[in-house]
Amino acid sequence: MFDGLITSGYDVAELAVDAFTLFFIGLVFYLRREDRREGYPLEVDTSDEQENHGAVWLPEPKKFLLEDGRTIEAPSHKREGRTFAMERLSIWPGSPYEPTGNPLVDGVGPAAYAEREDVPDRGFGGHNKIVPMSNLDDFFVVASDPDPRGMAVIGADGNRAGTVSDLWVDHGEQLIRYLEVTLEAGGKVLLPMPFATVKGGQRQVKVRAILASQFEQVPQVKTPGEVTRREEDAICAYYAGGLLYATPQRAEPVL
Image (tube, rainbow, N blue to C red; front, side, top):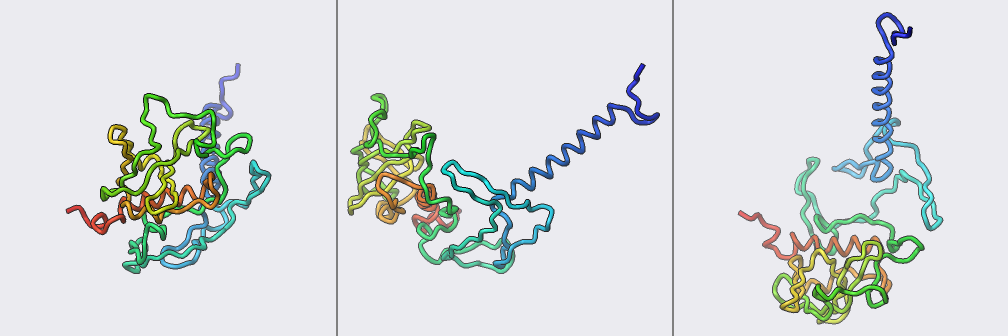
């Protein structure tokens, strides 16, 4: 009868454990290479040189077929082409930077964002996922919730920035992504819903992130009724940066 022994000191159970261990080590190695297809190779913090990851840890370029028929190659070794209005406070690696311009517009600190593809986020069928509700017939605000349209938009300084003129909804998630704000000074901008607090009883939408006067510099969309992935990141980053840079006092220590 077979008793599981392969040799006098090695059996099938030990073989199974060793095989699983080798498989797990190989899996970790494979996954650590694959997660370097985006964002790598890294750059040296104190210079513009790329870090040397060697020939083992960085995977060979692979082509990916996208839904719209285009192909991309990753890793692409594409370098960041933007320059930023900021300066290092020290020469050592990891040193913080100090903004030298308007950090909300310059994309510095919490206002930073990645340059994603400058195309709209599309769902199944190729339609844009995020569109104004005024262009849709099958979306509406339920009667039990306050409808922000027509409400005044109030900045962090308590001043009126404009009026909500439309709602931009997400087809896939069936929720409001942005409020379209018609500014007092003219023009329209998008306000991400997470940065808005709707006060139905007061007929106001309050925004703590930025001042009323700073709405005029919110990044614009290049095509009316359409927002691209890159534009989304730039818009959201602008409001996020305001939580630190909207006023000089916010950038100072609490104590």
